[in-house]
Length: 170
Image (cartoon, rainbow, N blue to C red; front, side, top):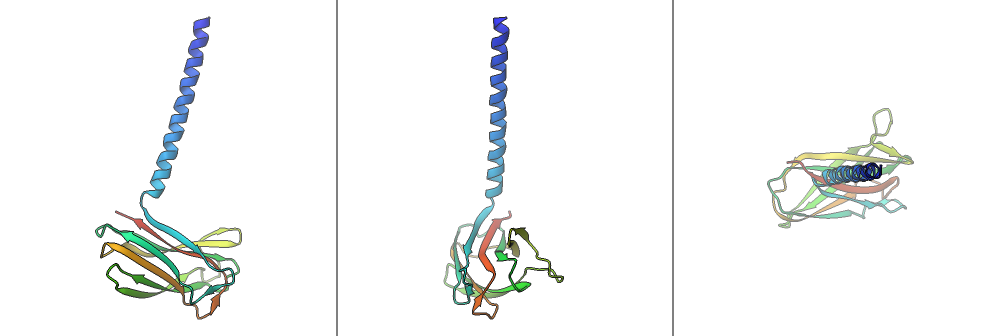
């Protein structure tokens, strides 16, 4: 009888250890799978008084691999009270060799019927807008991206955060 009780106790502790190991491995795989292809994912809060057209959101990125393809996203989080269905921005890119490019981008934030696009959470809507699905950086080195609001308002109300996400896709 004593031998049977010890066997059951040993078997139960082995099953508990196995469960722990399986759960640990699943969490580890989930965590590493979500982050391994993200080169950059940064957001900056916009001043609560409004996004002044003179205040550019700046981001820096060190690029080593010039052969990899990247998906390039703009992150926008706006309040439900934002009064426009879109957002125009200027994207200024400074390359490692000093060359600067300027792009004007329209971000559509709502459907024609006025329904917001993106994910809603409380009074905020988050959008991840694909700017380029197969971007290849031509030079290795330090890149600088600056995002400037271009809505023809001195202080744009309703934008809470602005950011960039760059993923490696190959």
